[in-house]
Amino acid sequence: MKSLGGKISIDERVRRAGLRPTRQRVALAELLFAKGDRHLSAEMLHEEALAADVPVSLATVYNTLHQFTEVGLLRSLAVEGSKTYFDTNTSDHHHFFVEGENTVFDIQSAQLQVSGLPEPPDGMEIVNVDVVVRLRRKPGC
Image (cartoon, rainbow, N blue to C red):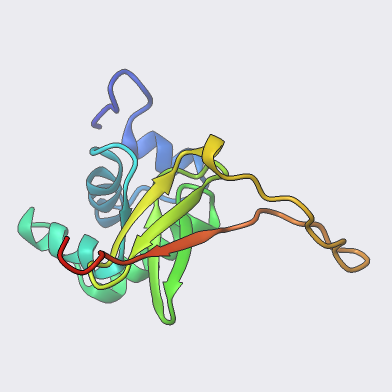
């Protein structure tokens, strides 16, 4: 069991989230969480897994990312139609997305405030608000 810098082990983190720590889940979790806060797609994680000699299919990567999201280990962020990124930082925060580069990074929380939210319909509550600010490089930069 690998430990996260004095924190609980990856196996235990997966188990505490209510999932069975299978070999593939643990291997993918190690890749996801060993590098701090990051944003990546299923395809990016699949490439990392193959490079690290973790034998896993793209379908398994997708399933694992969605399972991790459902139990609160990850946060999903839809930025381009069918393109979803997964964020290891599950706190409330917003993002920049660089078009053409497919890069996602956090907006410092003090830089953006969301106000004037509508009243949710009866029986509903607002869970969170995702703001994605799209960027593109200026010509010549």
